[in-house]
Length: 308
Length: 281
Image (cartoon, rainbow over all chains, first blue to last red):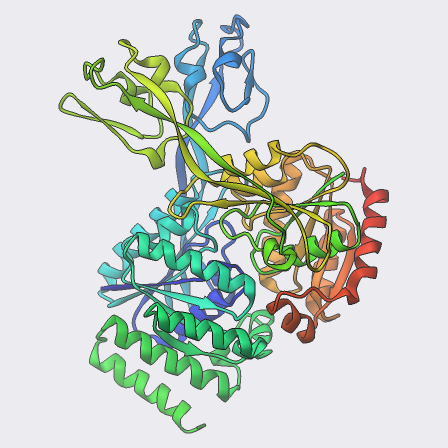
């Protein structure tokens, strides 16, 4: 089984739109949305929630006020300025380290499990999807990402599908690290803007750091032909394959606004490009699909060929 | 006044709005808290200024004093310390620097050492809004700890004049660290189901933190989703302080690192409303 992770560094380049389009094209797969802070894929693939599981991660202090002697030791030891004389003054600053609890002379503080969101399994137009909702303003997004990936793998094994398509988070911090490690291929969706090109460089370094191969799809390529040229040159110099190139097209906006994938809206130019992207990716990944399913896909793809 | 610009989702136009606000208010300081992927410097091209390395404290073990009792691993709720046989293993990337292991170690074998996580830079802009001061941070690749870097950046700020904080996307700890202590939060959204969904999440965090907020609709096209965002804002009692029209020409310019002065009047209008709405919740 292979895991394709769609990343971008910068937000807004089209990760979710491309993920959804690939979900439409790939015949057998399980979907995952690892953007646990601000998940959006479910809005595009018509997710109907089937399971919801609480996600517990980390700890939070609980103070027994009758036992607290207001000695101030917790205040003095807390490096995050979250507690003052037995009162949690700043719950968002608390990291759940337990220093207050372990060092309270009156044993008035205990640490209890902290609820940090939930992970979900949904049915979509394109098969099963695992996604999550991180609790507001909590940390542990990396752990929730790992949970989503673990549950997706279990499901993919159970369904005996050859491919996982994962919509990733922006950035290069803990959720991005948790998404990328151990993946078979990262598809970076990049737009030819200075911001996105800068962020791609950071993402490329991150993938290098964790030894995950990376391929690039240039989205909105006509936004700046000069930048697109420079981007291609620098990718070629670094041996990063460009597996897709899509012109700036308002069909992406229409797709998002109407909760459909771009493959479901008549626009041959974009669809051909995404089909090409899918062929390139499946070749790079070396995924083999069940033959009867592939025949069904073949018919689907032939309908594209008719438009050419 | 400290104004933070947040959105939940990436790509909605946080940086655009931050740069427009800076251009409309000479003398303001922009603080780019998206330390994973800072972008403001690409537009402002700050001249060489100060650069400071930011470190976090991480445990350091004196193996001669350590008797392998395992108390440090027991109190570490982040699993950053483990005991194999009588040997202590440190997992730096899991450590939050709480100091619990130091307090717990009976033979006092644990101390601390500074570990670099990134840099904070400061300089004056030379392009798009010349003279604007830019403070930004750059997280080391492979380092998961954005929040301490963001906090360090904000500590370098002497609170003078207007400060515009460009926040990272999302609703987790780094976004909270960026918006904390601001006088007002501008939530940038785009009129799509994605934009509205993530606006709801970001607004939830801002409400939890008790920071007054207003909305700017970017890429506004006057369509049905513009109305949906407006309806939602009315329902939540969050004022809409501005709309920036959807424009392909703007996207072209932005891609090449230029901020069109065409929208300066809109940015000035937002500043005007910030003054008035500063105390609304």
